[in-house]
Image (spheres, rainbow, N blue to C red):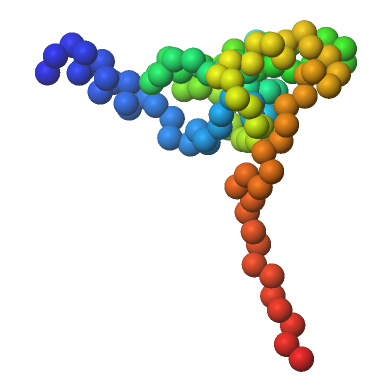
Length: 130
């Protein structure tokens, strides 16, 4: 077994299997662990996916959000043990692979169109027979 094959086999063990399918332009919520002294808690960060880079164990995602008049950009390593649950809040419709133009934009220029009908889960309804 070569060195590269050995590294890939070790990485395969550490990859997360529960990462949902999300793309650039989607709004996602990431639960990540914060260590404060000897205590550990989970905090949610919700934002727009403006970039996704890397592959395998070093894959990361850049989230952008504006809250209370200040903008934040945060990078998360997807397969990090600090990252807990990831859930897709809203699907976006974009035609670019990187959305850095959204940073600093305000008003209508910063809006991303929503993808209508994207993976709508239907619940079965019961029909009432007379």
